[in-house]
Length: 622
Image (cartoon, rainbow, N blue to C red; front, top):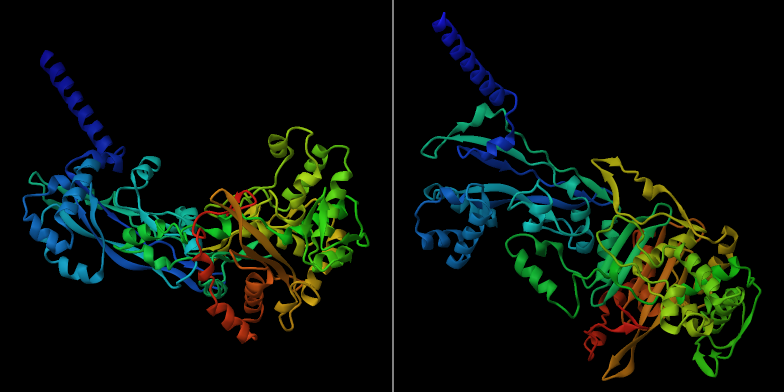
């Protein structure tokens, strides 16, 4: 009996152990456990990133095959280092540094030793790699650009760093991730999902076949293709027009908020940040502190908006009921603030709303601005009301778009002025420069374009955005299809738009008319000051222009800001008109103007002393 009992206990214990082992092997085994087993080798199969197309289905970004030399540090055996380095085309110091880096990351997991070999290098190396234990070649894809433009929009990809690895467990060392632009914002959509293959190793560390017959292996999933709102042809054309110039251009579709073009000048060819020369090229771009090609002026440069801002002050004054279209102010080739005269270039005379807009009369808008503040019992209340109206146009804050970065601009509050002047110690005369878009107000080119779209829509706008389709299906982000309404009633927009249309007929933009296209726009000439040897010094003005067309059924709203571009219609106005004609007609009829804008540069302005340093426009860095 005792023998039977002992045997039964032994059998039960054995069955229990076998059952538990079977459960662990069959039901509860996970890929994570496989990673902990030194007898199992993991190999990743990287998918192609999703392709990027423009709004019309034209390819912007595709993929080219590339190859990485991988290393598993603990499997490395004695080798002729110098011979191997010559084979790889790297220096010995670089080789040792990367091998040490891989060993620190993980002795048993693969790391990239030499990234992004060309097809030619791969063909030369593949047969010889078998002589070097612990090293192998892994195929991946690199970005191929079917355009020399839109680098600031598309962004670039690069190898993950330690911060990325700590933040997201999905990534492994050597993997690529989006660093800026669309590549960064839509990384999760574009990257796809990598496949994994597990290999069993014997006690001599040799591969003996798939682990568990490959039941844990997964296939890679290619990244999804996306269509963005950019018009490839318009983007490329705009960048050609910006050759030799600094500034930003943003064009929107008013009816949707879709970004048609987003140009920063100077820029660079996005293909520079692909391949083994990426790091060296990036360093050159990064340390170019003069032209700053990596600084996206279209969404980050905060400059004084200049005269286009006058249209908003007119709308606020109409909404607050302090003026009508017939209200007039006298211009004496300027206006007075106390005993100080501020200049104006409109020629002088009596101005109503329409003439004030198309002649861009400073005196008219200074008078209008004063009336807004005189309506309220206190300056604080007036500033609150004025600020609320301005912010309703998307100024003074982030627009909430899907752009990777940007700056908020500035619409000053009463607290801002209380800090400078003291509570109840300032009035509209202190901030009168805001009436003409100078002073403390600041806006980015995309904010100016959005403001213009809101006027074109007679009082509402849609959040500017870049994503249009994913895998061929329209994307309707609720935030992008919901209109945002300004605080201005619809009826007040028509007289302002009439004045903007007359800018082309009789006013400051009459030299930039487009045959057969009715445009509403506003020129701007922004004063440009810097401090040189403790002396406030005026430099060449900035050229600004905003417009939309056609007037009745607008299809495009645009803002152009050209640093040191002289008066508004000289550079910004001409460039805007060419962009509008290109988009609406598909071709340019004014060939002489096109030739002039393509060939003329402002390099002589930027070559002047101090022009390469950061300068200030009314206390705001541009």
